[in-house]
Amino acid sequence: MRDSFADLSPASIHIRFTSEATMESGEDERRTMTVELRVIVSYNVERRRASETSMVYQFVFGRKVSKKLASGRKVYRYAGLIDREEAEVLGQSVVMLREKDADGFTSFLWDMRVPYTAKRIWVES
Image (tube, rainbow, N blue to C red; front, side, top):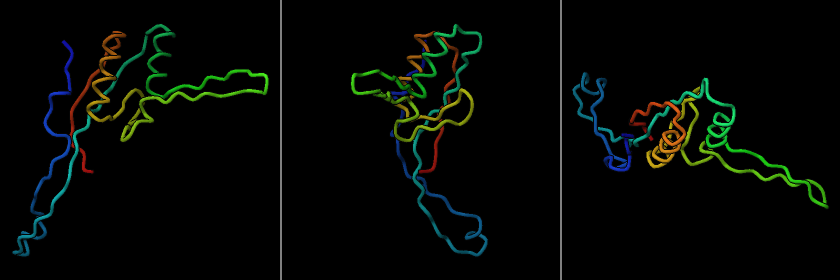
């Protein structure tokens, strides 16, 4: 069964740490760093039908549709996954997403029977 990211811990936490430089000098300086939960999803559309590959790429990168009108041409832009807030392409077929976006994307990949791997990570914000 597919993993769901909806039941994860809070999306943003504060971590306190003591740096080595301050410990060597005898000072106890503490800094607060905010980190957020992200999910890295890698997927493989190799050896898939062209229509399936196209659907996955349109889901990730969006698409443009051009319509001919009496007054000229109208181009419609449909946003993809990478247009969402804090989504990032890390490499070919690898994206880093917020957990709620990752849940939707992995559901889509699962339904399309596209092999994928999803890993949860903490990212400094």
